[in-house]
Image 1 (tube, one colour):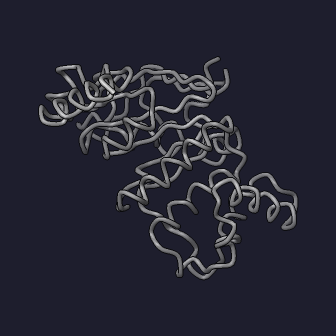
Image 2: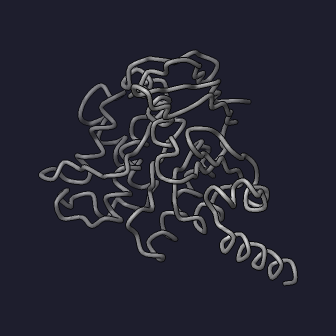
Image 3: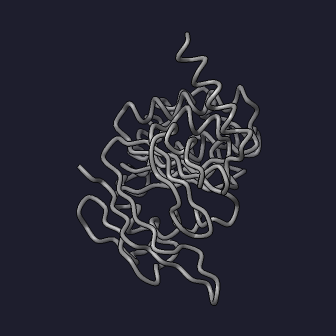
Length: 252
């Protein structure tokens, strides 16, 4: 069943077309990667789905309801949560208090918000840092905090904007494991990411945008083998390495 349907979205900023006639759909519990060069329109697309920008034309349906142009808090209440490229925790609040901010979207009081926040932290194996202050935690923990706060809103669909940016390979591996766990628990996830090795291993379905348009959509193998994707973003070297790796995996 489709949880999200994006239909012919267009967004212009003056004479610049940032998103041009983009359509796709997600089923419940999907996890997909949204890739493409800088300026391709990925974050603008996120911002329209999440209500930060109103499309110039097109439509967004979530769980069968037209949510096009609703305010961000209205869309969040319906079950779409998002994170941002640049994390901004409340520095003088604890990790638990930061996550409680998300919980207050649905909680009736502070005790309920605290319970919701604890559950989100436990889902992300992060409860051991609950009492750390926002200014004390490092970049990987800030990424985890962003995701926990989104979970605490009661989200069904997570829009994650570069959750692995600035992380080491081992830290990226930890985030990948967490995202798989979240997805296994039934959350639908869309990930914008520039680390191709990470996104290809995490996401069984990929959408590649270029110059404001959806250029290629399919499995990692289909995208990596598409000449348009190679020319626009992946490059011949990455495609060759991916094909070689695929052959080694098959031989094994």
